[in-house]
Image 1 (tube, rainbow over the protein chains, first blue to last red):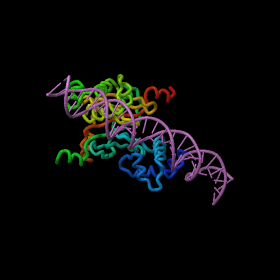
Image 2: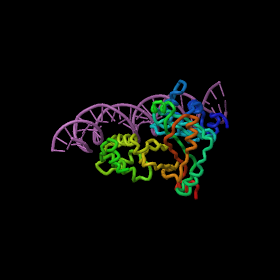
Image 3: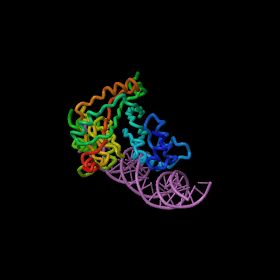
Image 4: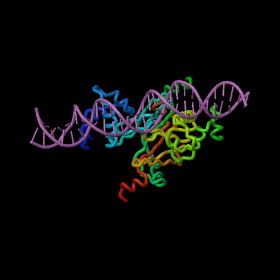
Length: 143
Length: 143
DNA sequence: CCTCGTTTTGCAAGTATATTGCAAATGCAA
DNA sequence: TTGCATTTGCAATATACTTGCAAAACGAGG
């Protein structure tokens, strides 16, 4: 693999500043970010929000980033680095998100079932957990 | 368990027509519905959209319905019936959604890992698959 | 290094989804 | 049936995202 800029140019798209920054920002974040959060981390001069949206769509369609659906109003994005695959845990109280790489993520049994019963060819999945983060557990249990 | 109306009254909330219809509509649907889809299925007179949103929030906070996060712009909802637990498969091409009840859904290994490494107390999870539905597979493969 | 055609960006306007305040209508216990 | 708390409809507002268009940036070729 190469730098993000190389990856983009190889695919025939100019590596503009905005695209590079989005990839850098997402790479540096341990959790997926919303477009607003991405914008807030942009070093000045900040691009317009529409530019960020357009670039996120492009990068997603090229497979360089991936959108993550948590139970929120806005979408979040993370880098889709080479096979690495992540799951999320979201705190139902405070919304805190943690992201982790599964030790081994074998859902092939599900995928085989789905193919035979529903006929879908599964290419990807998304697994999120919801519960209480350490801080909120402490508060609500009273200990 | 009892009727939805009883469940609501037991929790101290009036069982209004809107609430009853929402629960009925969601119960009858094999896949989770958006607020707009719910509204469209309402027998006249249709309530205002804000009423549907308010009731969905209430029902969700009471645990009678549950929101499902697919990679879309709007939220979807399904009934949270007594332990029954569903997963979804979404077609990346046409958006078609299928829902199924897992034969056995053992993600306790994940949950134990999460508790020990991240400290979250997991109460729930959400697993979605993405791929190509039978129709779109046929079209894109050319056979 | 400069020129030129293509692609992207900023800006403004537009759309979809969701939330909120308030007065009128409804639910339901007595 | 009455009375009071709760909910509903309506209108306004907020938020997330999309789109059209002219100006600016990109980068290939000279």
